[in-house]
Length: 259
Ligand SMILES: Nc1nc2c(ncn2[C@@H]2O[C@H](COP(=O)(O)OP(=O)(O)OP(=O)(O)O)[C@@H](O)[C@H]2O)c(=O)[nH]1
Ligand SMILES: [Mg+2]
Image (cartoon, rainbow, N blue to C red; front, side):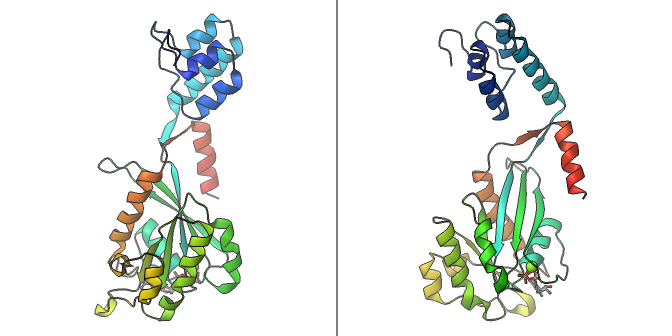
């Protein structure tokens, strides 16, 4: 704030004729409609300085914004776990709400899961990074492990997958220290069988309470809502403000999505 005039940083950048700063502030979401104490918008300030280039830039921005739509900020969700654990089936259950038989994933699949606004929770858009669990893809996982993402380690609650959960949790800890990963057992509750649990020392080593394991069935859908809520509550806290997309950007996004 410019103390004597009630300037926002955008007003000040216009006042000083700093085009690069104006561009960055607008890109970061600065509000071009705020007025100074004497009722001047940043555009008025640029105009009073005779900065025609900046005036044009702000006019164009205002025109784009008037037809832009607000879209949810994107969050990343990374699914890891052994081959056949049920990662792809779970991703489909999360994004589409149904159960479909899946083939093994070669390399990586990216699914888009959109969560509408609900009771104060902002709209969310997840990119689900579904990493092929077979050993030959193991070395590629490091590329997709980023601090900003949420991690879900998935294992088959019906077989000995539980014994290699340690490797996955350990890998997440090494690549993104400080992340508390969610642990999910698939095929739970089917035929009345809850799910197997990893050995207690493994859970302890990763600070996971056995009650915190999310037991679900992608086939029946039981337990899926619990996972959704766990993911959404973390993402709602982590995610930045909503993005604005101009009509031109929206069109490009739709075209790419349809490819
Ligand atoms: N009954 C039942 N079957 C499941 C469940 N989850 C996955 N499956 C089945 O298990 C098989 C393997 O599931 P995928 O989702 O392909 O496993 P994945 O973890 O993606 O495996 P990779 O891609 O090889 O890493 C599929 O045939 C699914 O239909 C579940 O919760 N219940
Ligand atoms: Mg898969």
